[in-house]
Image (cartoon, rainbow, N blue to C red):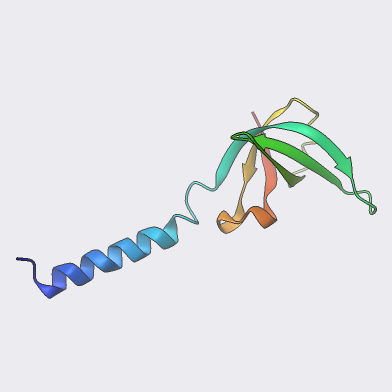
Length: 88
């Protein structure tokens, strides 16, 4: 039988691991399928990742073209602030 300390330590480890998931492995590989420009002249890139299209910005001025394979970074695991961070 496990004692209370072991159960508590295991629980803390699980909680920490879940929180760290948002900080680790926040990059996704995809391909640029569309480029649009908004009213302010900012470009948005549609990147196909795992069969779904996501509109992201070019975070480091790489200026990819349609068909370019890219890495998309998700700050804190959040798609809302996602941006292209590298070209493959």
